[in-house]
Image (cartoon, rainbow, N blue to C red):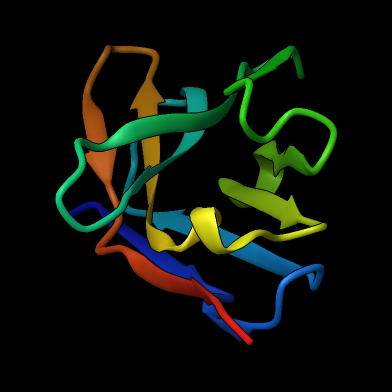
Length: 116
């Protein structure tokens, strides 16, 4: 059975930083894409950042220059370093992984709250 376990969310003041981690277990096929999505109350889930197996990455315009996605293929783990956080970054952040056989997996979500 596949499990994605997220960690690192919490409450932070505007301008602060957080680092999210997501580790996968039970995935038989190698992972192609790893990514982070977020969903704020009353809004649709949106892609924050994605990274391919070779390391190529893309970001939502709203987080470019502030967030950095990285991955450890040996550990089936993806990270999201979030700097210069703003109140509008407040959301539940979800980890997503797509295996080479195109199986799609989601984490349970971790709350990030940016508030003074």
